[in-house]
Amino acid sequence: QVQLIQSGAEVKKPGASVTVSCEASGYTFATYWMHWVRQAPGQGLEWLGWINLKNGDTTYAQKFQGRVTMTRDTSINTAYMEISRLKSDDTAVYFCARGDGDEYYFDYWGQGSLVSVSS
Amino acid sequence: DIVMTQSPDSLAVSLGERATINCKSSQPVFYRVNSRNYLGWYQQKPGQPPKLLMYWASTRESGVPDRFSGSGSGTDFTLTISNLQAEDVAVYYCQQYYTPPITFGQGTRLEIK
Image (cartoon, rainbow over all chains, first blue to last red; front, side):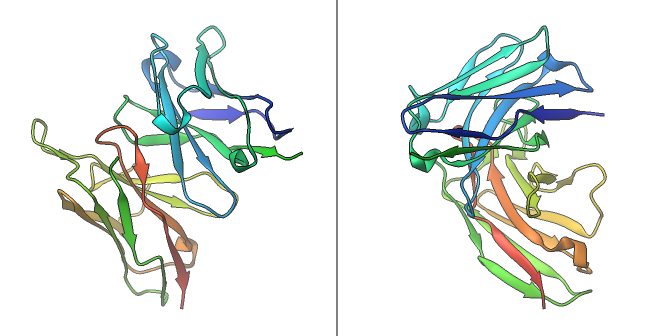
């Protein structure tokens, strides 16, 4: 069965960087896209961008341009999302979500990774 | 950016009754080439990731009970939950994936009356 397993919770100081990983199993990794979505405490869902797992192409939401980097390692079926220059309002649960394309719905989601930013 | 607006923000419905959630997009999410509405619905329970319920506005995801149905086209969409069950208590989100940035509605909280 398809599973997306994310890395654990992180606590970071403002200005630092954090990388969240998402290990996929149960399907052919590079035939899909991976999207990243975040959810601040008690808030709604916010899309950060996607990575084409086959060729590494990326598209980021304009809000995160220059601060977010999405990569993947096809040898270990893992996608990564790095955010730099963290601010307190980056505190959120970050989800990876599989899409069958760049403009597509998300049929499987990771369990979420809490990133807390506090001085 | 396409703005997705859901209504109501919250609603309470009796067990066995019908719940209706509306979603309006600020521009059409219908693609004429393939006659599809790029609209999805998700259910999120506390402490869990969102779960896909509907895609292409009206196609039910595998394993989703047929009590859930989606309708609408263009800019106006509806998620209907018939015969409400206790396990349907959740927050529901609509999503447009017509064009980046992919955007979600603000969410509708569904409770039991």
